Image (cartoon, rainbow, N blue to C red; front, side, top):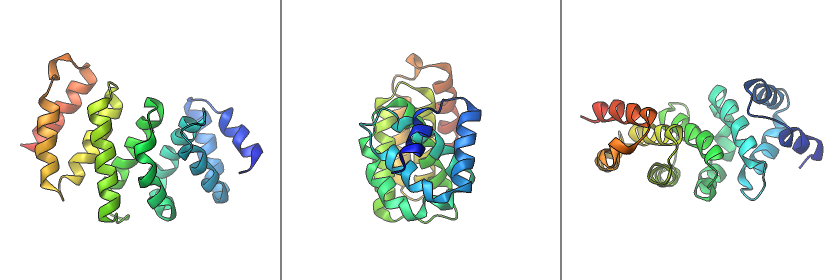
Length: 177
């Protein structure tokens, strides 16, 4: 791990410019992607969520860069508890579930399904839930049991949720009919 690069991640912020600058650095220096992933996988590191924010932008633009790291990515999903990290990770899971370029193994799909179901049930953050439910929806096209499970989960305590959450649920329930 390059200590100067770690400092760059540690000093980054949630501002879009900061995240974009870090994303562009990775595009210009792809050898640092491994360090970025390493930081993100270390959930005991207080800056792991910042690495996740950057990974989200990197993979949003160039999802194929995850391919050599896909197994580790899927394996580590169950370790995250930070809402800030989960927001970005659930969005990456959505990218993977929608992707026509990346082929997931059955085991990788299972890891994503398990993580997204856990996040959907445990989170009170609308964005985390929305990305998780959408990833599950796309994976439900292959595994029909997911859509039945989604209908049950999404219809529970619907009225007690935030407007953003309710909007995402209404949209998804419409698609599931």
